[in-house]
Length: 249
Picture 1: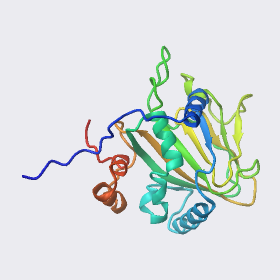
Picture 2: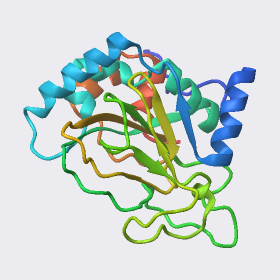
Picture 3: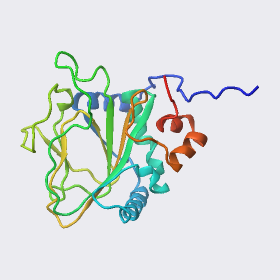
Picture 4: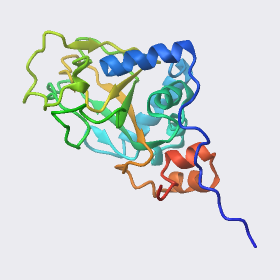
């Protein structure tokens, strides 16, 4: 008899955190975002730029979905240690990829409206979504963000506000323009008010977005392409779980 295939469950939900990670988790829980230095190396920035430029030639519009199926050079972003370690520190070790996308914002693009990424309702009589965040996005900005080419704008702490962001893009007194540099990553809670500012420069801005969630939630992507199927069959337990190999809990 063949032994049953062991589901790729981790042995422990809560990892042991270093003092640095404890500080990062506390900051994220309070403010809803975290800037990760040295998230990718200069060489990896160049690799991602080239891969995204190749990919963009095959697509119209500014959004690219199922990014990991587009080019093998995006593959390392799935479990990139500087980011995934912090995702697990916040969400626990049972983490699954929600989606992998990219955005190429051309010169002249207008202000985005304030929005949240999560679709579920919040409870005005309790915490907005329970004890833990449900979804955390991570932007790898491949071009230096400036006030001209359109930084990501956030309202720190708004992830705990139990009502929707306002329509349009009015100014908040406490809003923050995050001027990320290539090599840095910006993690932000899916409930955080955020938007992309207008690109008034003559250059485009390029971003790879890796969004994670707790593994018992439904993901947006089907994970049924060649890349996902291969890793679900041959990857590490962590990679299998990230790509939805656990069918039920």
